[in-house]
Length: 369
Image (cartoon, rainbow, N blue to C red; front, side, top):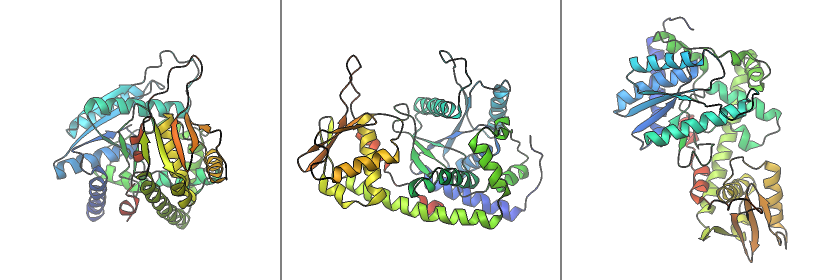
């Protein structure tokens, strides 16, 4: 737990004004905003500032905490979040991950993350909430940059987490948006604000487990000098601009698609007119919408498909990727669900609204000013 302290009143006021502006920008027309609150410092700051935003703007916030059932103290921590929510007049729900039917092994971070997002999506649908705020911070951006740079990621990945994005789970998260109002805030300035308000938070012991890459990267970031962090943020700023421009070009091309039953038709000339990442983002969005899968295809697979589309006579026999069937149709390309394997259920109909969600404007430029 933290201890309470004080902060300069002017700094506190400036931080709150910045936070309220970020919530304004991302919440948009939504009258109710969901808050995913784990009880850690980042999400506790999200709760505090989200409640302040709701009071100031006449909106409503509701919060949820996921109890993964992986630590004996997790339920008590979730109940602690519920107690804080009560003091802030924020309705709160504890979502419990049922481990029935799983193997006895300890789940990995990816499995737990998937379960967490699925529970939050189900809760949001039940509450008729269209958008959930997450507590990712500026520090998370830097950590993500270093991890993706080590993996050899391109500009799209180096831009880091988007301030506004569709839910990563499918189909549970269909139509649900995730927003990250705190991406421009450093973790320590948020903790200082929590101390100023005499609010406490919990420290998850897994944040010290060096077997996780995120933990090792966080420890590295803690040792970075301020000027090194600023350089990373500037590089990410350039990556964000590139990513936003690519999404805009891909979004414009998406409007030129035609739908024929379960297939979307896109002229080859439209694909050929796109450059670099814009072409990959458009193909990715159409593949995911047609295939109905949850895991994004690897960049190498997208590049291979884009290369075949550019070949004279390429794609004559079609190609399957991430559950989608992509085939040449004269001077156009068709994207549809891949035929079902023998004995398997028929594929779900395509969800073309998913393509639009994946290419939506992330409003990144305004948020990071």
